Length: 498
Image 1 (tube, rainbow, N blue to C red):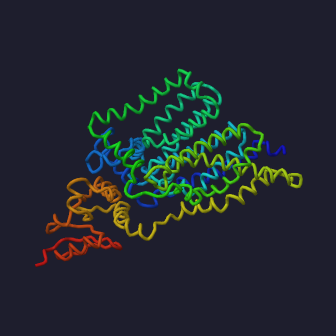
Image 2 (tube, rainbow, N blue to C red; image 1 turned 90 degrees about the vertical axis):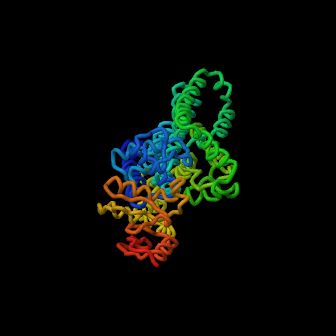
Image 3 (spheres, helix red, strand yellow; image 1 turned 60 degrees about the vertical axis):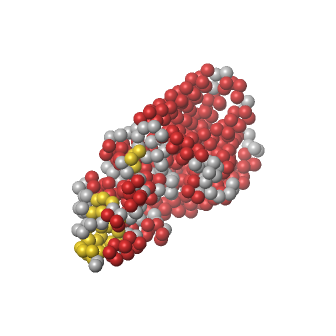
């Protein structure tokens, strides 16, 4: 057993985790085009911050963005990265990938230090990296707000837990700062943890102690100053923002189904197994109550209450989207890691007398358990695939990406993929993925705009993907086909058809 306590025992696991984290979170981040809606929408927001040098009032299509009303912490980060690595998929997705890495590091360090158990820390990270829902759309390999908010909310929750455990006031200030950063990333989403946090405080009989601590109020003031500084200044600079926030993020999502995204109360529980591979391990929850380690019980109970309460709150909401449960993933991972360790440690202790090196047995069991799901995560990284429907939908994006890669300019070109009312009132959000790439081409010297069929003139160069618009154009005009890419056609308008 002495080998298990040797510091070199864990080196192979550390090296494996570093390699796996890099491959699963960072490799080929630029492989796929930006996804509509949110990812491409945020990408355009970030581009326009750079173009206009306007950091407070986020715009889309040159107009104040009152559809994507979430605070701009993610967009600010993406804009800063665009200044460093250039405009492209990498700058849009890197904040989420870094946040995903941060979540893994926080889990590892927190479990190692608090539970004094490196194996549980290692298992928790492996559980995260093997979870499909954590790394795919709206996850750590996507330029959306969910994982960055999860990163800050995890730091908030763990620092609040440390305060309750160790009664050091510095932790409540840390918790307040991270709560503010989570709020500035995805608005009120982090407050879905509030009922669970209150339940845990009452369970630990710390409520009166909390109310009697002046630092609790000071930290609350710190939170409100940080958050209100943004919201008040944003409203003062362009009135109407707070009203849009109320409609989009409260009445328009929680109280009513947004854009038809509705389902039953059991939606998230029903889909958890598909998105979080090891969630069936949670049937082993009763095992935890039989262990003697009080710290494991406390960490497990805290995670269980927070994850289940968050899931309950979003399950009651009228709008339901698959990725809304991502903030619960680190807490499920912690619980699953504890259960897996209890089972593996029990098996190891049963046969340890026949095994010369117990750590080899531990490694063997972990490889057996994680090989298939980790391989699936790696395959997702190296062989990302769009569905057949998405392949057709993103043809124009890919066409424009090819021009960017080949450094080919498109001069006096117009994209026809919208009706007049869409273009004249507000640039359509459904074309955010197209606008992102035309912005890059225009910055490099192209001259690409957008037109409806009604505004076409003789001599126009047109990029058209949709069959409906192709038919309208070719039925009214003689065209020269300059280029074709699957469904995408590059026309020059010659003459009207008599």
